[in-house]
Image (cartoon, rainbow, N blue to C red; front, top):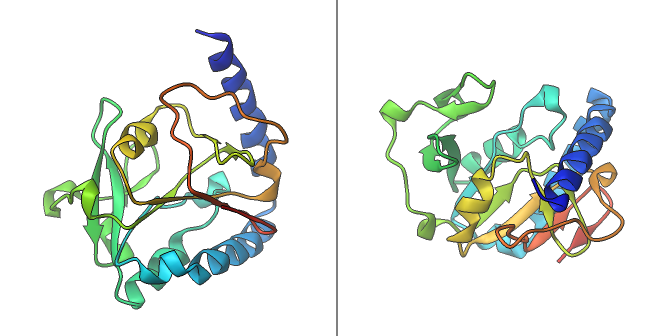
Length: 192
């Protein structure tokens, strides 16, 4: 394991701890502000097909549940990821949050038997999960590389949602396979 990988793992643990220290109420309030900022972007308003991770409340991720509902209510096509092993994701359209069930890792995913995956080329905007980010729009994810593999072939607008406590002051250690995002949104700033 290289020095950058070891440093990334330390940073990942540190930022996960910071995020988990947020109270549920604070995380909910901050999430509301972040999602409001996201939905005000012209690129969001113009997007027809939105890909979003489905947040896990106990992990204190920026909450995407209300965001997904809002997208569905306004007639946008919503696509969510499904892990299919070997670090790969399938991209499954949903009609409702009722289409989701928790997998063995506790991640809400669509039932694959009732789904027709769509091509990455159809996506207009992707909401990316993250553990930490910097002002250069680099991210540290959860370490399995699912999103780096997916984003490598994706030309959609890549938006990272994070709380202020997840911002790294300097430049995060990045490797050649790490894909920077296009926009980062927290409760107090937007980096484009």
